[in-house]
Image (tube, rainbow, N blue to C red):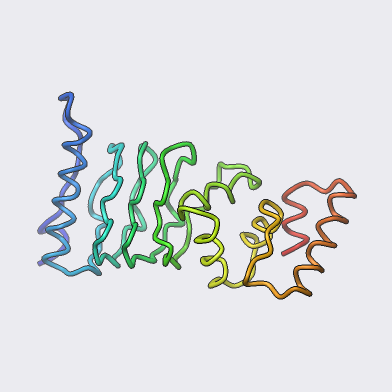
Length: 196
């Protein structure tokens, strides 16, 4: 069976119960796809672009498939979307609105590629990622599993925590660079680049 054999465009109907109806239709389509093709199924054929709520959709499932091209710009609620789920895919193309419900969207075991939050000021992205992971300790674990980069630099600037993934001498060096950069009046982006 090909993707086109079970393709479903999920569009809310104009009735007052349409948001929940669209959510339930999405969950049903996802369950059918997972039953037919297994937890590694590709769900990019599902058009969820007009939906507003996909909270808890994969919570507690074994989903490890692909949703990288989903258009999530209309979403208002993505809480616990991948909670207790082994999913660790690529979400870099997702245009996530950081002002919506994102609490615990990602499982603490998520090790995939995060949404870029390109329209969000860099200095506010760390807080959004912490919310997505359901807490600073979970985000800290995510960073521990990633190569050092700008997300790490932003985390160090924003949280002023002593992360487990950084040796004390490196942390001291970065704190010195941070203090020097702040003293020179560097912008947040310049400071992240300098630390990175």
